[in-house]
Amino acid sequence: METIDDSPTSIPFTVQQCRWDGYALLDSGGGRKLEQFGESILVRPETKAWWQPARPELWPRADAEFRNNGVWRLRNREQARSWSIPLKQLTLEARLTDMSKHVGVFPEQEPHWRWMVPRLQAMKNPRVLNLFGYTGVASLVAASAGAQVTHVDASKPSIAWGRQHQSLSRMDDAPIRWLLDDAFKFVAREVRRGHQYQAILLDPPSFGRGPKGEVWKVEQQIVQLLDQLKQLIAPGSAMVIMTLYNLEASAFMLANLLGDAFQPGRLECGELTLRETHAGRILPLSLFARWSRDI
Image (cartoon, rainbow, N blue to C red):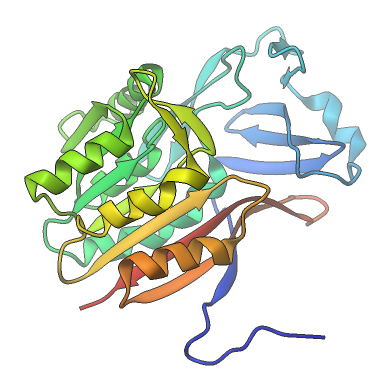
C-alpha cells in the first residue's frame, strides 16, 4: 500500500475537529445530521452522511427540522426562530430561515478561528481581508484578536446578519468594514490601490453571483483570483486560509493552488470535520489549505 512521503517537501495533511462548547453533533446518517446549537436541537440535510444513524432514539428530541421543500418544520412549539449562542467572548445569532438549511454559523470552521488567533496576536496592527465572508464570524474572531478587518460578501442579508453578530457581541467599535461587493472586482481594485494585508481568508462557493449579477465559477476563476491576492500579501509574517465545500475537489488541490501563489512559506491541508458526541464517528464537511510565513 502506498503512503504519503513524509519528507520535508511533502504537504502535511490534518483532520481538524471542532472544539466549541456551544455546539455538538449528536448523531448523523441517512443524509441528515442531528445537531445542538446552544439550547436548540436541529435536524439538517447532510449529503456526506451516507451511513445510518447510530442513535435513532435521539432524533425525536429535535426542536426543528429542515425539510426537502425548503421549509423549517418546528417540532417544538416553543422553538424560537432566532437565538443566541456564545463563542468565547462573542455572542452569535442562529436563525431558522426558510429556503436555507444554514443557521448563520459553520461550527466546522472553528479550527480555523483557533489557528489564526495566536498568529494575529503576534503581529503588529494586522490587517485581515475576509472574502466571501458570509455572516462574519471569522471577521469578529479576527477583530477580537486585534486585527483591522475588511469583510466582503455579495449578499446584503448576510452582511446585515454579520452586523447583528457584532452588535450582540458588543463589538460595535471594532474596526470591521462590512462591504457589499463582488470579491473578484474588489480584489482587482485593491491591487490597483496598492493595499496589503497580513491575512487573507477565503471561502469561495462553487457557484455564485455578485450583487450586480456577476457570475462566479470557482473552477474557472480561482487561479486568477489567487494571482491577484498574492499581490495583496504584505511582507513579513502573513497567512492565507482557503476553504472549499466541493465534493469534486481535493485538499491537496487547494494546497497546490496556494503553494503556486504564495511560496515561499509553510503549507498544510486537510479536512474540517465534526465528531459525533455519542458514537464518535467523524463527519467530513469541507476541505481546506493554509499557507503561512513566519518572520
